[in-house]
Length: 406
Image (cartoon, rainbow, N blue to C red; front, top):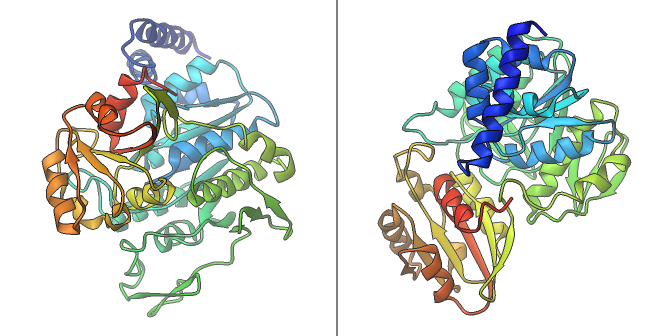
């Protein structure tokens, strides 16, 4: 690397280490921010010489990135932004911290995908899904799909691994020359009722979908989830054993296997590594405190809340909602969430916007109790499992109270 890039890398690593030592976080943002101030081209310098996979989408990025990094570890050391810092500052910090590795798997915020493709020249880009998220500051789903489509058009040599079940993703990816389709199911349909190509309705039946006014339709996937496993492009079925809960994570595992296959990793080699992943930056972590087994689930938009309810056991459940800058200030999205799965279980609510959540639960006819703190929530439930479902900053607040469990 040029001397300036070497200096920037050294300062980035030092700043990140100081941040961790001071207890101010994991250093995954500040290190990259300072490094890029010294050398604005630092991310490109750090990416040079590595075979890189980028993972982007509204939901599941962090988990899929962690699983893909584990799978790719069959071939050698892998750099990754495992704590979810998914903008260029986080990518820069992760690559600087990792040092020289032959491979990298990076989670990318969907807004930054075009820029990160330009700067890192990846071998593979994985597109998971698109749904509404923080509409007070983010783009509409169709606009995001157009941004992805334009970004990929400028990089025809990139291999794309894309979700065949999401019409928005299919439309964004289908112009690419090398596409591998995976099918992980799509529980949330509310953002893909209208074709982004023609504006006509999209019809669905038996897992298939098609536009009623143009040729856009679900492609045949090479990788698909079947029962408790994954079918690969040869038609071989592989049992997937994960420590992570929910059927959605079998879909994330299928995506990770498809990404790793683009680097030559066979599913049979990767699967044992996927089973070692237990928690990702606190997501799915289980902590025992005062006789309660507390499990943390992150849910930040309607689609991810739907998946969180599928993962949660029939046990006392704490819901925590904030509306700070990383969450988005608009909580009207709560009315797109169906809270009916919470019937017949004790429900506690907390967070900065607990009263917004209270009104929503009353509309759904869900009985609840308001608690002022996480400690009060623990005291309010009997010994046993406590499920915690929280949006981003609320999740981080609770994770900090549990000593930043990873």
